Length: 586
Image 1 (cartoon, rainbow, N blue to C red):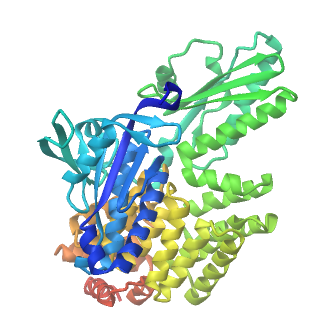
Image 2: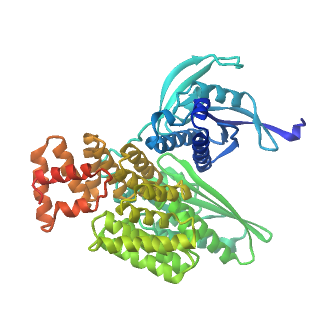
Image 3: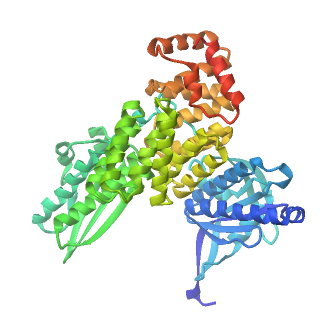
């Protein structure tokens, strides 16, 4: 094998196999093969979603490599979580459980993509140390991801393993709930919006041509103008930001003086007919470089180049600081300037989570559908607004709202099978018709299409809540919060509801206090807090809060609230209603 055919590098390796595979095959060959095929899909999708690459899936085993240790661990946790959820309806003796091992070490990689070496062998040995349904990692993995992945580690000690000269220090790894913001209300979208502030400094002119200074300033000004349109992002004005022009600046000092969390700086160089623009985003408190990019363009029209670069930078910052990964999707799926403007206005209205905001969002999304009838985005999110009217108790005609959610969601899916919003709108419609399995399938499909987006993750948590998978709903609501820089209050409400119905009453109360500190109009959170107080035996507080609800909403009824909560377990809904009535609600 020549040196040109292989390369040696550091990588995170994930190895897995099915526990008791031979027994399962002996008991039911056809059913085991079907279960294995389904499990392989789970592995492939989660490995891909966490930027890994499948190397092999021979027999019942899986081998994958990742560039980042955090990606390998996050994938392993997500895989075990999803496999566990899917196995919930399968008899214990027929469940296919995988052992997973993860190691960070050197691999030898051939041109054909196959990998070898001690790193692979150690991952395989760690896999054998894992419990069925569990994960074992090396100390190199634990040290690399500690504080970066929501996971806990239990020390398994030094392990002597086959064909490895030195003992391997192993740890079992399990998911751990990330800490919620400690400040009351800090989990809300409104609080998070106040924290997102940025100054765009004048880009440095490195062209050697004084005449290009207007081009440099133009890029900065375009970015300031476009960033100012993003709801929830406070942008320092040009005059203040340009005061630092031409100076060697300490960006941490700039952040303190301007009172911003982020600074964007950049430079422009020209060589012949080409221009190179660099931009980088710095977190001012720590001085950490959070994002950087370089743009090389032909200089046929200098100002068109500037407009293009400004748009690219704004899109990247919108994703990084404001709307999350969803922004990447709709910015690319909606083609026209007018369509994008309408969608952005609709998205910002939708994020307010009020009846008025939801209606305004629907009008904007329908305008997107009118402007771009071949794009699924307008139809999909208009359908989502109808679903939200139902889930939030804002609909005056639930049957009509569900029908519109299904119609518009289906139209989006007809245009593009990969419409995550369309699938979620349909999930809500079928959920209220009692189609729990179909709703779960639609919600999972939405998440499979957009695995790194917060909305589909929260949508799956919503379906899981009413289907009775409370722990899974808690997990996915937390993940949605992590994925969205300005997550809406209903993500936190979902987690609180799942905590309440799972019996974690004190945790639910803490979460609800955070929701209501900044979203007092979220009526479902108010009534859930009353039921939670009743469950904790704090009857006087519950009755006082119920009295306040009636002062604010004379038309309140327990029946109206429970009608918009489609529990699979009817007993849960009835016990919830009883708690509200006992607190004095009619």
